[in-house]
Length: 245
Image (cartoon, rainbow, N blue to C red):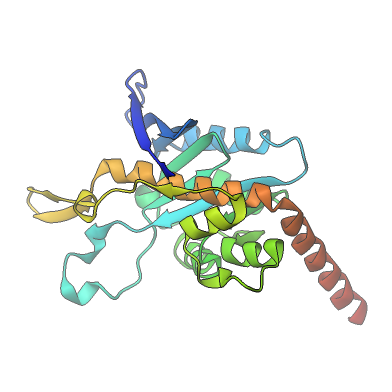
């Protein structure tokens, strides 16, 4: 089945730095906060740490760079900082607009992602982690690549899980159709008729960014034993290195 995505905006939010939405994925509601307020981000991250009754806190992640960096042809192959960091813990999503603070990660986010209890699950995590460290001064202590996780957790040699996209991984891991009614290409960009005459990503797209980390979270929750196993293996490796030294 194709999961329908609808959005409701909460107009009661009075913070000029924050918008709030309820994103509906079929029958699941995801309360989504879009913000560049440090106080809102800090509160969200604190609540996320309290969300798990187990020791591990699973967090789905995606990070995006807005098209505004690519106005000129000569700039399109350059690497730029992320403008948006999207986190999900199930029924709660945070879209953190980092463009205002891209030069350095804020303390609350840095300490959250370095917390040993937090396992961050996403696509192409090696590259995402590298860019966060290089451009934002942020390190992820427990980065989990969702494709690698599916390979370890499912142990299906008959499936090319390393090449699966996120929708394919969701179907393989969760055992049900997870196709999403994603927007058409022309939905992604809009022309801003200002002094710069630039193309920018429409605000609604940020809400679709909340869906991908949600799927990563669900996959991580389903394969949590594989995550714990990987963490245990890392600890054993560190202990062996210490003994040799």
